[in-house]
Length: 402
Image (cartoon, rainbow, N blue to C red; front, side):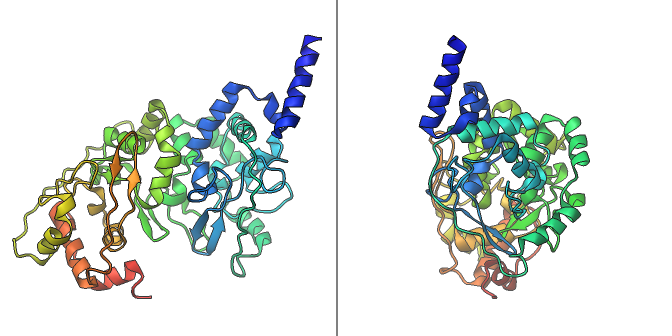
C-alpha cells in the first residue's frame, strides 16, 4: 500500500510540475549526472541565445549555407521537447532526426553524438525534463534554395553520417578522453576541415579549420606543442579560460563558459592526454627576436598596444594577455591575429574573479598596411613566424575587400 501511495504521489507531482512521468521517475543522482553530461556536450552554447534563458534556443549559428538557429530544448510541450520520450531524445541525438521524421541540419553535431552511450543520453534526458519548460518559439531556420530542401539531407546522411556498426565499434573500445573530445565535446565539428557539402574530412581529424571567419587551430599533438602547449597549460586553459598562451575568445569562449569550466579534473586530464598523447612532445619555446627602435611595426606596437600588453610584451594580470607566450602569434596563418587587431575582443569573465578587459578594435584607427606591419612585427618578435603579412591579406581577412 505504501508503494502504491508513493506511485500516486509521484504521478501527481509529475502532472502538477508539467515535467512529465519520465522526469518523475529520474533519481536526483541521474539528473545531476545528466546536467554534467549536458555541460560536457556543450548543449547550452548552441541552444541559448546571448542573454537568453538557458536552453530556450534562439542562437544563430553561422554556416557557409546560411544561419541555422539553435532550438528550444526545454520541456515545453509546444516549442520544446516536452513530448519527447527517452527513445525520441536518443534518436534525435544520435541520428539527427526529429520524432516526426524531420531531418536536422548537421549544424547539430549528431555525427559526433552518434556514439553517445544510451545511459548517458537517458541521464541528459532526465536532466532536461527536470527543467522548467520555456514557452518561447525559436527563430525558424530558412536557408536559401537548394539547402532549404530538408529531404536532401537523407542523401547527405547516406553519404556522410556514420553507420551504426561503426559507431558501436568505436564506442566499444572507447577511452574516456576520446569520448569527451570526439563524442560529447564534438571538438572535431570546429577543428576539422569540411568539404563543399559541409561534411567533415575525417582523414584530417582535428587538423584545424576556419569557422565563422576564425581559425580553429589544429589539435594534433605536434601542432599543439609547436604553439607552446603542454598538459598543465591545456588543462588550465579549459578549466580557467586562460593560461600563459592567452585567453578564450571568439567561438571558444562559449565553450569555456558553458562547458569546460564545469568538468572535473579527471576528465580534463583525460582530454589533454587524448590530444597530446601518452608521451606528449615537448612544448616549443620560441626564441624571441629584437627589432630596431625605428621599426614601423615596433612603433605601431608601442603607440597602440604597449599600454596594456607592456613594452616588452609581458602583459598585465586581469587586463591583457602576454605577447611573449601568446599562441595566436605562433599560428601559421595570421587570420586570428589580424581579426583581433582589426575587430578587438569583448571583455570576458573567467573562473573565480579572473577578468580580462575589453580590447578595442583598431580597424578605424589603423590602415590595412599599418595593421599588416603590426601583425608582421608581432609574429616575428614573439611568434617565430617570418612570413610577411600584406595589406591585401588584411583586407581579405577582415572583409574589407568584399
